[in-house]
Length: 60
Image (tube, rainbow, N blue to C red; front, side):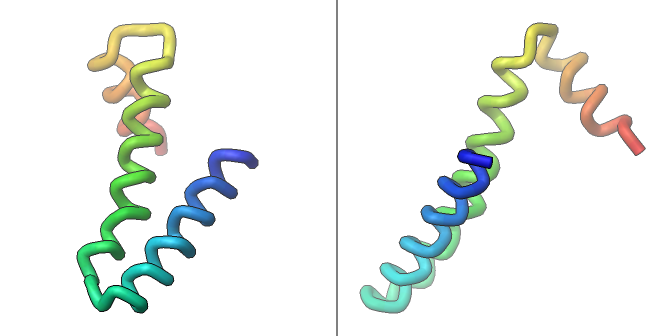
């Protein structure tokens, strides 16, 4: 639950700064934070990285 709240907070803050500063590139920050979270979770998983990625994408 805590990672979800952190990503939600990052999204709200980046949206506010994107509107105030008129820089739409700041709207990419939430997507980058989600990708970074996903990458960290894959790296932390106790197994080979390639096997982990194959396992994640083979789930249906």
